[in-house]
Image 1 (cartoon, helix red, strand yellow):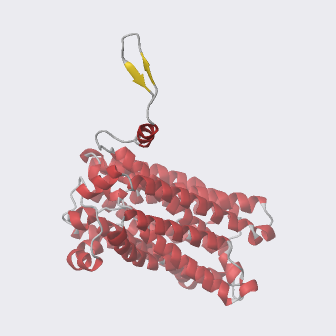
Image 2 (tube, rainbow, N blue to C red; image 1 turned 180 degrees about the vertical axis):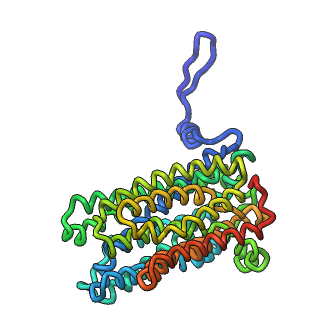
Image 3 (cartoon, rainbow, N blue to C red; image 1 turned 45 degrees about the vertical axis):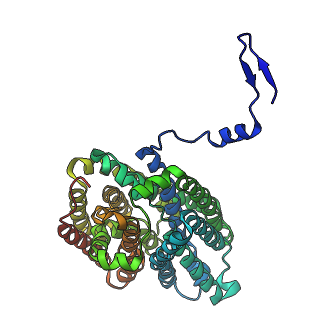
Length: 450
């Protein structure tokens, strides 16, 4: 190593290459292993926004594309019902994906699980972009979409990284409602971008071009976003600081059978506590788009624009829910919003059948209520789980809430409304609100500060 001598007689040597490399690799190493809730929140927001974007791209295509592309042999209503049936496959597959992913993590580690989820989600999403039509492949086109949709559900089950639970455990006691809502901002963000893409494509392409290739573009975008987001989450959760913090909080996967046998009550209450919010979720996003497309002369692009305005109100509601929950408690917030959703359910027929002004009112009020309730819906009762079950319990609670509350909502709402009228959509929403109130009343252990 070459050295030089300073006027003071001190020798200064050039740094060895190996030492320089070590310094470069350690440039981001922390001195205190401390991770702030804000840093955890970044990972939560990144993950949720990418998942919701992918979710809404598929949901919108289920209304605007798949009925004509895959079910031209039947009417528009029947084709949409078939598409909504396939739409539900991901929610059925998601708990199965969680079971498989927990086993993979226990044996091979968190990085292997998330990498597998990344590859599966990316390949299934990109595969939908290349989906053939029924005219080209017949029944095989329907089968391909079904398999790809199941793959999406399995991959979403595997994408659980424990960051929302870690955030809840590390948030300041008087700010837990605020930090709980951060991940929920992914829903309005994802919907706004997805709806915006379809709004632009429909408004600037001919019907022929849109059905030929235009609808495929959002799936390319979804593939890119999901790959980037999952790699970002993998980079966060694979660091030694996060691994240490997850281990300290006992956020590790446990046996699903053991958890179900000992924590079945908490799983059921957790899935039902926010049922009103999850039911409302699809009744203001996916279902009204299908209703307008089939039964209304309104332009699709114009209605998508209205929904984009409504989802801005949802984002405001999500943020407001954090402030409200920190003041009055999450349990009281969810209970109050369940009552308001029950009241809102009585106006569903009048608003959706009342012309453009009334329909716009339905969208604005619905999205506002959704933001206020959904902002505190995630993990509302996961504090009930003992530490060793919280990682797996939080994942399964979310899976079950989506399955019971939202997975079949578009299918049921469109099916009953087409046969019996919109009043039954209101009854469906009312039943969700009643279930939420019943679950919250049973959940006596939920402290107002959790």
